[in-house]
Length: 359
Image (cartoon, one colour):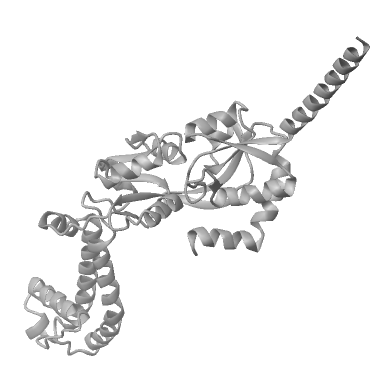
């Protein structure tokens, strides 16, 4: 009987000790939330996590002696999990925004980038689109500027020549200005038919200056006209931010790009995840996808679909990535100190280049 009591007492003590160690172990284990966002968060076939964000987090965790378990969410679920203290930290490329800062805390930024636009990479050579490009505001502005320049130079030459060179630049204001405009045009293009040439000293000085200036100016005007006709275009005409008002645009629910489009008054399609957006864009179900530039570019590169989709050379809004923690988290300052040390390390820059190349 006495032996049974001793065994029972020892069992209770052992159970208590095990419980204490288990609780201590659980207390030291960090709950990490994440979502797939290549190249920052990559989930491989063995369900192991890697990518730029985890490369950094693993270094921080090792330095601080953290053990952790990972829970996967979608974007909105991840933000919610942080805000209600369901997880200790969200390791993902989360954009720092004032709206999110109201319900959670961020670490220091570890990556700076921007929002951009992915579009279908279709070639469009039909007559309608060519005509549209020719009559675009940009093209018309270039032509008007060129015409004004020719008129001003021609007018100056006409002032010198109208009395002493009536055969070529005289015979009334209309005909004289028309002749001087023609002379300015053929001179700047270096064609120089020779049918008209200044004879006065003042006219010849202007002509000489115009010839040299023309060598420089014509290349500038040519480049501007070429740009107006051939700048990155989609068959629906997406060349700039303002064009998004006229086409179907998609972005991911809860993303910083959703917040940006809302703030700028765009109508857009809300998508459950990034992959859905790329699929819709590939199948021409939407005209453009607004999202984080490095994630768009990495997806196109790794999926080898650059012949189908491209990212326009436009940064809509600069953004900064950080990890997210519950408000007033005691881990924030501890993690921040190590994070700043790690991203200032030359090894971190090499890791970034290994995923993204020289940006």
